[in-house]
Figure 1 (cartoon, helix red, strand yellow):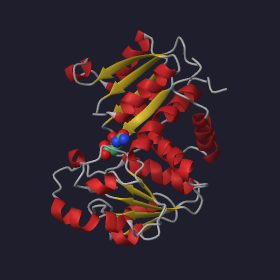
Figure 2 (tube, protein in one colour):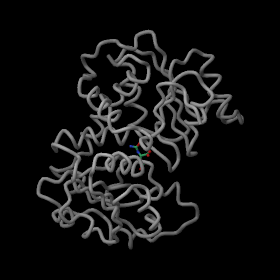
Figure 3 (cartoon, rainbow, N blue to C red):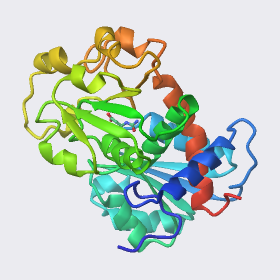
Figure 4 (tube, protein in one colour):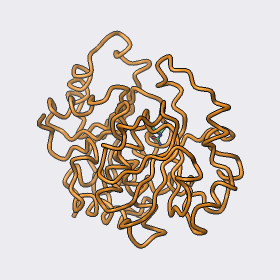
Length: 303
Ligand code: NCD
């Protein structure tokens, strides 16, 4: 499918140079002292799913660059009256949007919009497919602490099957030569996940995944995407919850990451969430310059 110029729909089809370019641009962005590169532009934030971090940081990023922002939530909009995705997109374009950031429960929704619009569409998470801005901010965060992604041992633990964060992270990290171990019960990690990228290792114990890791990425159990599947949370926690003793199996200077929202006491303990290795708050913080770079690049103002 063709996509409007400047769109960011996923990591899978990006070249490593494009990713490095965005990360380099993000390093030059300072939300408190930004040049108003997007003055006169209107950024529409269209959210069909709950969001705290992604939505607020795209909004802060756009405003830091001088753009005007308008938020449209599916609840309270004509989407509730049955308006289709494309009709909503055409409406927002007609209102004067120069760029649309969209989060949608269906995989491919941003791509569909980008195929029919003449303005860039940024994917802020589509179903179980991709979440490119999260992967970029995670790479940015890792690279503030580690010299390179090459040969970095990364453990991704939890509900990988339902996670667009995991999918985008796997695509990004494997393009740069990281060694990735995926870990979870078969409901959350079918064997077929190994085909997402070359060289992925599937592990079934948290201990095995974490052993010697440089980065431990923990994911939330996405109860809202469990279509009638029943899983025993107690069993899950006893085997996969990130605890301090498990985290200690990683390298001493390992980074503990989580895209949020975190559920303390479920996929990780309180101590782990707040430990000195935790990047959880820093990831959110880094989301702003990374999204500034994404928006500036999309609108051709990235010089
Ligand atoms: C995630 C999402 O919505 O994909 N959160 C985020 O954007 N940082 C992960 C989740 O909901 O667990």
